[in-house]
Length: 350
Image 1 (cartoon, rainbow, N blue to C red):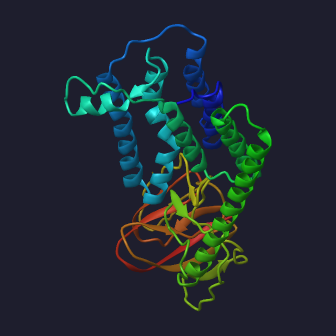
Image 2: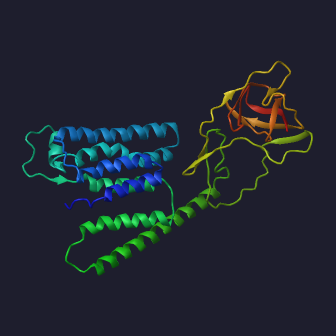
Image 3: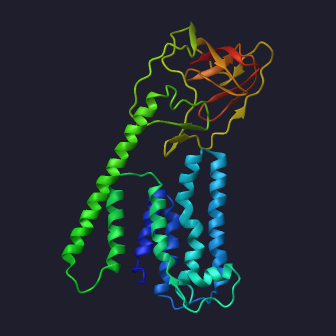
């Protein structure tokens, strides 16, 4: 097998770090993988430690995937696991790069797992750095930063890798023509797949009038960028009556500040409980601030938690019979209802 071209692995790692926002990790990792080309120091690593290093990397990937899937959506967990896969496999590739052999004998690796000694006489060395390259590319692709620049740099990396396998002494014209044809075909193919996805989502949204609806103060899955049929409904989701002043133009429920994939999340936005007011008084949001208007709202609640809609600049929640109120730094208001059903409350706001 031909050796990996100099600096190709470093360039691929930097491409992955740029796409995933982990450039600060990609830089030292790229330097550590390319340093053996200029440093004479090598390690005498046997097959058993290499096998354990590989197992450790796979185990780390499964642990990360399990954690992300159980703490969020399964799709988002898989995507995030793919993004960090180069980190979990990095110890194995580093061990090979700094080993004396420079390659890993697959037959010896397998015989070590089967506890057969000695290993087969005919070794089958494999440079896992060639397999690490597509892993980094897939991880970079999972970052969801689309654009012509992404595909252009991906084409450069692919041509760089194929250049090492090109047969010497032949005219480069046909090779360049085939490479250009493959690149253009790949670009057209990914555009077609993207439009097919758009079409599928278009029809899927037609069957789900509540697509994208969520009442989680920390996370909200969206259908941004997808074109579906507008859903006109006569369902009443909230009743509003202006008690003093003009009715508000907008109502606020939750705010999110980080977007990844198709999900908005609220970072560092823990819900803090408000002090329980004396009997007959309202829940104070901005004590001492005079309210210029008031509005009464009625909504249906179902469950142990519910997010309240309130005008921007709310200063107090009045006539609200709940077990508790919590608020985060973005102004989202979560209440613990006494019972399911219709919940009425009045909001004083600036």
